[in-house]
Image (cartoon, rainbow, N blue to C red; front, side, top):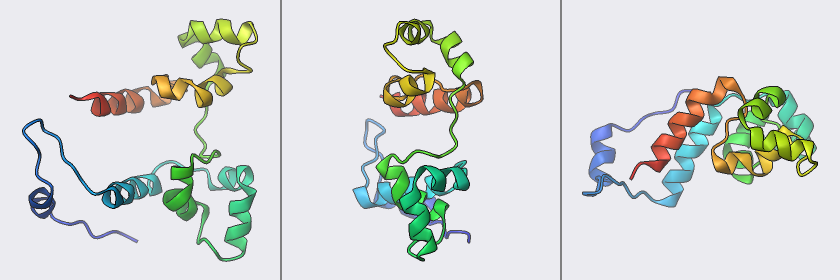
Length: 144
């Protein structure tokens, strides 16, 4: 189902930009916007339910309409796994030689282990296909 979008003029009048080009919005609106964005991201619903058997059970019990519904409303905010985001072991180690050495030395179990526990917080890129997206996100959230 398509969502109704409020006109930009209305939102801009409610939440005008500061002289520093910042916009302050209520946390409930921020969460809503993230939830709607999460609803439209790539999600392998079968993998998500496999990695989150409690969600699969809740869907069977009729507590959630779908894995996507759970992910958008709760799972994204809980940091649930099983979203289908793949870490390319060979590509990640090749582009992050420090991680390759740490994996070889036994400090990390794998590229995936490093990425999900530390690399994503360092803006490392898990696979070549996400390079442009993650670079764009990094640029947007780093804007002064």
